[in-house]
Structure formats: structure tokens, C-alpha cells
Length: 290
Image (cartoon, rainbow, N blue to C red; front, side):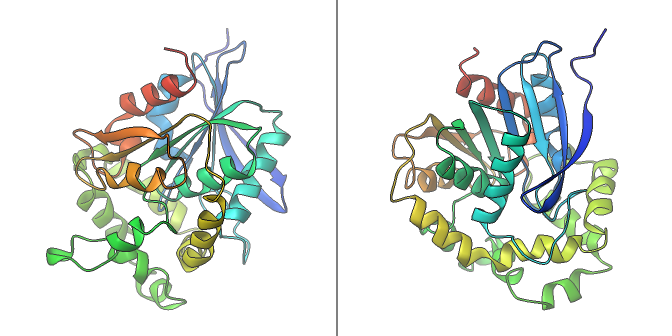
């Protein structure tokens, strides 16, 4: 008998790049859900959410271009290019009526995917990200006492220097983010940190992940352009109470005025690992399955 919670791993060539993706789902199929990770993570951030959804949905969790076990080409790290990867993957897999959930940069890519493929993406969830290009993220990058601001957004957008300084120190660097931006630092344990360090220390991975930040202003302009035609599909946006809080919904309402959402209590930035039940419920609400 097929185990509905078994995760399969696949690799496919689409849109000129090799994409690795994890897939799980009910033996007889189910509504399509695409889960999009952020930096410095991979499909693995969704492992607990996948376990909660696989009995009812067809769940696809790709490693975004440049991350995990996907290809790491020299360019194409702006939101529109990555949205093109996601659309090509969905078409390749024969998906339709897709519910997309994006976290961190995956939320930006998910929004641009939804805005570009309006007949394909039928619901969108944004978790713990302020979309660039609408003024909210830019404000959160301003210095604050105690270093409690999104300093890394600017630092990692500088060409060449961040890679030089981070290389060889990936583990303590990532650990700082996983601990500092969490409500529950134990949600990402030592073995989980091992997973993320192994991914970011692959050849080209650090460079590729930083390239997303170096394309910040390109992606911001793309978001700004798409915002001129507001999304009309169901959109929900939530920030963690210990991190972005209400800023996530505020930024998303600039591109989807009817978006609903708010704040995830007892949660920092890493919602898929800190509050997987909440995220799974968000998927079910968006897909109208209870």
C-alpha cells in the first residue's frame, strides 16, 4: 500500500535550469500545493508541513534556483526569472489550480509567480516576508538599536564581499539567524542546521543565494510593476509575532488590497518549523478544504 506521507525526490530540467523538488501526496491525488522556501533554506523547511498535508493534497516543494540540490547558474536570481522556473515546473508536472505558499524570499517569488500566471495560481499564502518594492521592507532595513533590523538585506546585496566573509563560517553564520529570528530556537535543531549547512556549502551555493539579494532592486521593480494590476485571487499573509508581525500583511495589501491575515502567535521567522500546524491550516483554508 502506498504511504501518503512518503516524500519522493525528483530532478527535472525546466526553463534552462535543473530543479530538484520534493513531492508527496495522497495515493489518489489531491489539490495541488506548491511550497516555496526562502534563504538560507531548502525544500527541507517544509518537512513538518508536508507531513500534515500529504494525506489530502499533492504537495510540491522545489529547491529554488541556486538553492539545495537545484542548479546554480551564473544569473537569473531576480523574482521574474525564478517565477518563470516555477511556472515551467508546474506546467511540466501538469498542475492546475495551484495553491502557492511562500516564505521569506519564496514569498516574493510566489507573489510574482501568481501575478504572472493568474490562471494557474488560484490562491496565495505569504508567510514572514515584507514584499520589496512597496516601501515596507525598505523601512525595515533601517538601523535600529541592538541590531534589531534587517541589516543582512543590505549587507548581502553587496557584490563579492559577503561571500568572502561568510565562506568557511557558514555554520555559525546560519545559526545566528535561526536563533536570533526565532520565537522557539529549538525548532531548528543541530541536525536541521547540518542539513542547511550541507546545502549552502555546495559548490556555488553561497554565491547563488547571495545573488538573490544582489538582485533585490531588480526584484523590487518587478513587484512594483505587477502591483499595478492587483491580485484578485484569495490571498492571506501572516508575520510571526516575534519577527515581522503585522508588516507582512501590510506589504501584501499593497499588491492584493483584499488580502487577509495578521500575526502568528508564538512564532518567529521560521514558521514552517516553529508553527507547522498553523501553516498547514493556512493551506487548507486557502484550498477551501476545511
